[in-house]
Length: 436
Image (cartoon, rainbow, N blue to C red; front, top):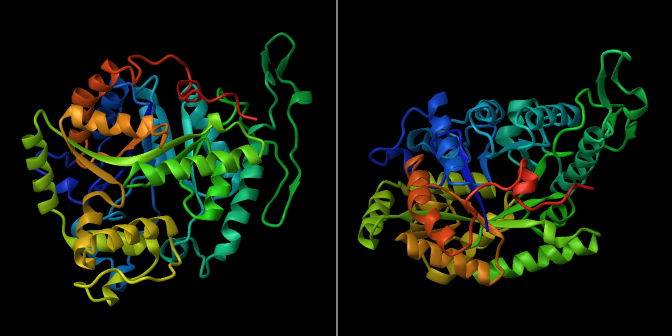
């Protein structure tokens, strides 16, 4: 299986209470914090570290930033992930380096150049999580008074991807010659204008960065809506999903693979990684005590604040002791479907939903021994529900180090996970072929 670590360069990764947990790292703006995290992940042979990102302090709940800032929510603080990853490129050798960058607020040339640079600086370990932003709070930070219509966001995103891909391949293989005697620094016959003219972008090219070690970065996406899955099936190498049970996860994976095949892609070169929040201990009682303490530190308002941001609805307007009402949401439909399913299944109140969402968003929270966690992971793999997991550590870096010390050796003992890196690039380590 493949393992990635989903963390943020801020207080909240797998749990809204992680930063409050006794012994949690508090200096999250320091270089040493991320170096320690990167080293732990590489020593455990993780495929990649994935730095999620947002571009505003959310204020959807009650039209106020208070809940985010007070409780250390999703966007209370976020360092620039590209700068953090650039520092990790110097202190790691094998770990993949993934960052979220929105297609809504940068130009294709800028993104193509930044990602190509990271791929060179890391010797082929760069990855990009593609998002098409939908948040009004973010748009207002970029002089945009109106968001692109929902129906057009993925259309614009498709064209964005076409442009960056053309730019990455505007240098042929071997175009960078560096022949001192020639002289021939770069072969002009192997560097091309792209002359892209479309509805959204007009870009002449070429890129002023040569072909990268991977050809192009590994592409991540989290498509949950029908249109989102079409986008993921066309472009993504790795798809991050949120499912609380293996059955819907298996259905999603099968659907995605069928869509990819219809587009002429090899479905075996798409990796589906559901998010899980592991709370692991040497004994079940230790793990359960840790989970109980973590849950006790979560304020329901913190989870509701983030959920409101995700789905684009102010949830403070509804009775907190009643269930989540059915509604059409302008935001992340996948997140809404997950919490709506949870609400229908358990009948929990909106306040309790906020607490649970704060503990582990809408992903699967599992606590227990290394054997318990490995059993669950192996079951999902055997059911063909996924190709690995996106580990969302609730306490950083404590949860990462515990998972690496306890669960990884158990997975290795079962022959489910590598004991050393086999490839030189992220693409090779994830078993992905050369990109077309």
